[in-house]
Image (cartoon, rainbow, N blue to C red):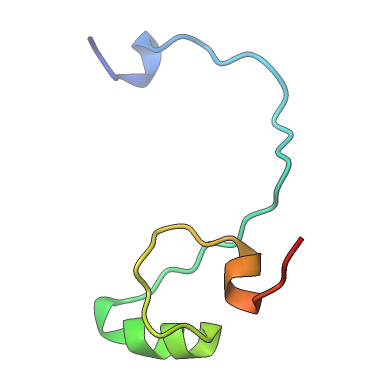
Length: 58
């Protein structure tokens, strides 16, 4: 199976998502600083829901 873009099927549908996203890119040596800024003990996941950071419940 080829993963070249020209060989993949075209994805059909709209680009609507139910959630917005924020991506934070940082160097490994900045992890502790970023965690502190977000109010986390450490960053141990790739994706966080905002409620996990703010402590809000739906």
